[in-house]
Image 1 (cartoon, rainbow, N blue to C red):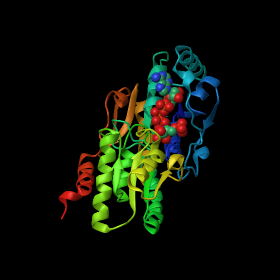
Image 2: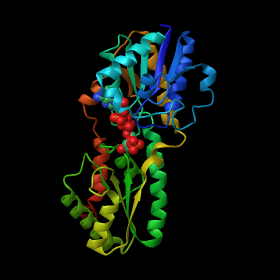
Image 3: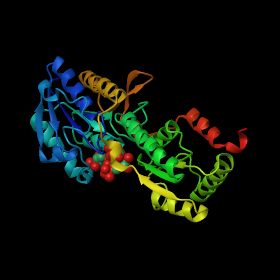
Image 4: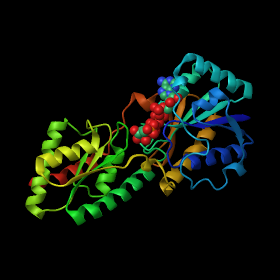
Length: 332
Ligand SMILES: Nc1ncnc2c1ncn2[C@@H]1O[C@H](COP(=O)(O)OP(=O)(O)OP(=O)(O)O)[C@@H](O)[C@H]1O
Ligand SMILES: O=P(O)(O)OC[C@H]1O[C@](O)(CO)[C@@H](O)[C@@H]1O
């Protein structure tokens, strides 16, 4: 193998740079040239690329974002676009394309491989952690830390004013960030897509929980963590409804894109480094249409399509613990 390419696609995730670095350094060991495409699949279509040498990835492991830039590229979903990309990759003599991104980006890689003879390999990089085949995705640990730090701060002001706060976190349609940040911050209630029955039932459960906490602790603060895309009107609407129902002071906080930024925590740097190195080794071994991941600390590879044909579950025991904690009526 003489030449491979990388791109970062979809929402950026802290640790993408660490992964780019690992790919470049591993490839250099085997004398393989690395081309970096900019702006996700746009770069493949527009031939926006540059050679990446070890000196280009010096001092980037600690940087959030991605030096290659990321983007969503709807145009890439067409056959013509994939054919054009294949043509561009062939012209440059690329033998394997490593795509760091979420399941959408993996779909893009599989789509390309219908029109291109080279190997495609996915590396899970998304804060959402919604990819089966890896215990965690690059960026997820940092996003939890960021959400957690913010919720801790919200708790301070919530306590000072004895207010209700509704904190909305990212995750697209998955509740990993929501559940983990809620448990770690001892939130009083968490609403995530995997556990919500319907909004009416959930609202009643929140109101009874509020009543029970008030009965036990008196007037006090109350923090609810809610995943995005779950409640019509999001945290703002839920805070308004709660105020109407309880007359308590309620405030919404939407954490938003702050969860995608920042220097990656050590777990993301380590995961990114392992998966980047492993992806190059798998490329050299001739693997195609796979995604790499880490399960129980071991690097593994699976079919690319397994990333979206299966759904990743929340940590069942963590769900049980949090549910038990909520169930105040059963506690002494
Ligand atoms: N079915 C598809 N065919 C071709 N390309 C696709 C397809 N689905 C997604 N892509 C490409 O992958 C890009 C990223 O996909 P998407 O926006 O779903 O993000 P993602 O990779 O899932 O990451 P994240 O969820 O973390 O933002 C799309 O903008 C598009 O360029
Ligand atoms: O930055 P954009 O395009 O608004 O996308 C936001 C989405 O991307 C993510 O940050 C990562 O997939 C999701 O959590 C969120 O729903």
